[in-house]
Structure formats: C-alpha cells, structure tokens
Length: 209
Image 1 (spheres, rainbow, N blue to C red):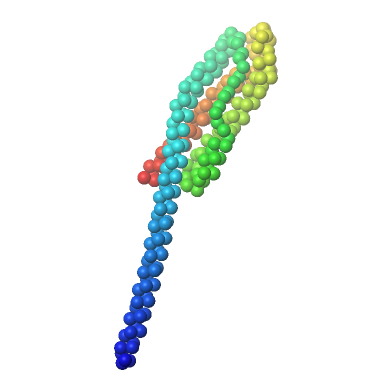
Image 2: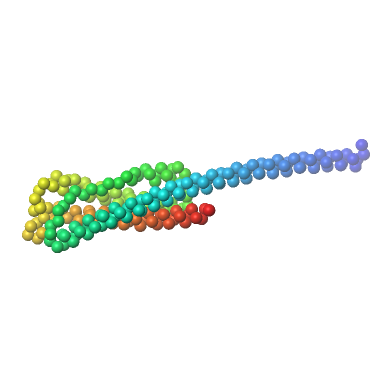
C-alpha cells in the first residue's frame, strides 16, 4: 500500500469517527431538547391548571360574597341608624361562619404553585391570605365577646343592654356595632383583594397563551 493510500485510509477512518461523534452529540442534544421541551410543556399545563382552579374559586367567591356583603352592610347601617336615633335596637348574637381553611393556600403552593406561578401572582395570593387571616382573627375575637356577653343574656330586658336615660348602649356592649361594621369592612377587603388577585391571574393566563 502506498503512503498516499495509507494516509487516505487514516483520514477516512478519522472522518468516520468524527461523523459518529457528531451524530452522537446531535442525538444526545436532541434528546435533551425534547425532554426539556416536554418538561416545559408539562409545567405550562400544570401552571394553567392551578391558575384556572384559582380563577374559578375566586369568581365563585366574589359573586357569593357580594350577596352576603350587601346583607351585612344593610344590617350594620340599620343598627347604626336606629342607635343614633335613640331607638335602642335589639342586640343579637354576633355570628360569623366561613369554610376557609388556613391550609388551602399552603396546599396549593406546596403542590407546585411556588415554582410555577409568577411572582406578582404569588404576592397577590399572599396578600389575600393575609387579609383572610387577620379578618378571621378579628371575627373570632368579636364572636368570643358575643358568646360571653350577649348570648347568656338574651332573655334580659332591653335596659340590660342600654342605659334608658341616654338610650345608648352600655359600655360593655359598645363592641356590638363595632363588630357589625368590622364584618362589613372585612367583606370589602376580601372583595378588593380577591378582585385584584383575579385580575392578576387572568393577566398571567393570557400571557402564557
């Protein structure tokens, strides 16, 4: 075999080895790209599922909240009107019920929300959680006072709750109109933060499409 032929043979083998190396590299890169693409697609689907679920819950909560809030606002306004007019309106037990669980948002975030959701959406979600927690704390405080001061004395005469001379609530019962008004404020704060979060979620979903 001539020197030229031998060199050509070595070059051919080297070229084949390079070609194989390139093919392996391209194959590995393609597999990596495909896996990365599929992962991003799964994350996008998961993100949209979380956002869609939140959007549905918020819409339902905002709508039902408007009805409840309107009723509570009327009750608070009517009591305040009658109180200011010296009518000594009846005092009723203060009751506040909710199906909110502190673990709801935590569960959502632990299921992947922290990694998948936009930072601004997470901030709005945390703000809603804060409003709920503080509001429920206030409601629990007023309900406890009601259970201790009002409920055991519902069979008492109106003079037990009011000073007949001034027609004002006795000092220990002055928390009652405050409780009614705090409940209305809580409802308004909830509506505001839920609406802001809903807008943020809709914006994020639109941006992901």
